[in-house]
Image 1 (cartoon, rainbow, N blue to C red):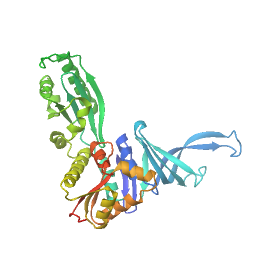
Image 2 (cartoon, helix red, strand yellow):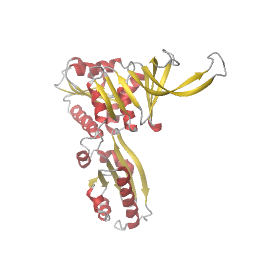
Image 3 (cartoon, rainbow, N blue to C red):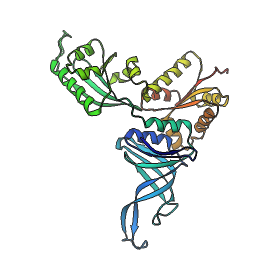
Image 4 (tube, rainbow, N blue to C red):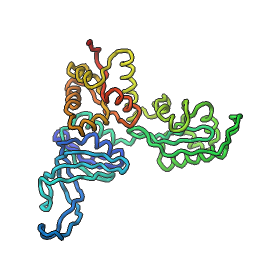
Length: 352
């Protein structure tokens, strides 16, 4: 994400989306009632408006809309922002509906009453995160995944042709050579900063010892896990070796926050969860850090029942608490969704 212009006093930020992660970020901050403006394609009828056979062409126009709905289509990498036209050229009627199809490269201006956590999210997306690659390997299987702001993306999984024999020390050097070549390819092509190689038992050491590329070896950190393949990814993400590497990465922060909440819940300590408990804690000014999943936010908006969650968020900010929006797509978000999608770490313990 690139911020082109910012004036929070006037509630205005002009920015350029540069990748699919930016689209996800924007889907979290653009809300119904916001004003969005920018260049967009619009179907325009040419000729007599009453004629059925009038030509319809797509034309690039500058339009300002009042937002009614926001949809993020992750797999097509498109963010759809729909609303009512407030300003536009003469051939675009005010009050008509229009949808911005926001893609990487789109420039938009967003005008709204920015909450601190929303402005922070946009600023956060402007910094290029450390690129971390995970490789989970054993004697005949390697899984590669890229750490993302909202979790991880599985890049590929390869299998060797190692025969299952009683002697586990018999390994395929050809498989390790293939796995190392793929590791090198991802490192160079994606500009990887750090690589975490993980495995059960001793496979990671054997694999790394087979690598001769010194530049590649400098990027590698070893970690342990109890399973193989993609099933081990959630476990590896919580490993201290990886947490240290991506301390500034969103997924690590989210995991740390949710794990702290779960610890407090387990000992009946400084925690509240679910809408009722969290709303009560907010009303008493007891929330230090509010955690809410993007899945809950989207669900409530679709049901037109976001007002209660919005009220909790506003009260938290007004009483000096912070807000962290957790992605429902990673393990932290799934755990929080299991608690109702909302919870809080408190300043003091509540007595019920």
